[in-house]
Image (tube, rainbow, N blue to C red):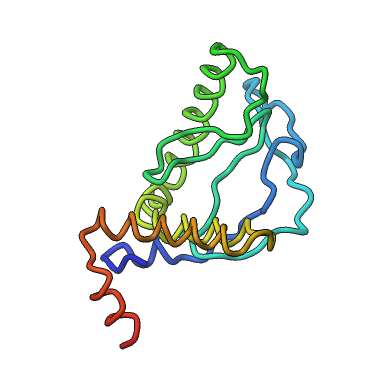
Length: 163
């Protein structure tokens, strides 16, 4: 977990919907013809988490997500998606995250700062108990790759862990 001068914005508690998407909203048009969200439904998976561990996903035809550096991306793509469809999904992702980060500029920094913590948090959150040896083996391999990328010696990490 990063420790820097942005701690108040990184660890600020935020309300996370848990299934945020247009399927759980009432949307109308405002006086200027722009979409206006009037209600959010389906809060049973809602929770309060630090901003650094929150998930800015927006579900539309695909899921609009960020990569580890807070760059727009998308997942859950239909198998028959064409290159034009994929270009449209990317446009949606760029527009959504530009609007989100314009409204909450510190949120983008929280996502960038927590990339490793977020990877672990999301991986553990999504695990459903199947194949623990393979699942945690893959997660351990990811951790070892990241340690090498960061120049962390595994012997040193064990000393830090045990202290």
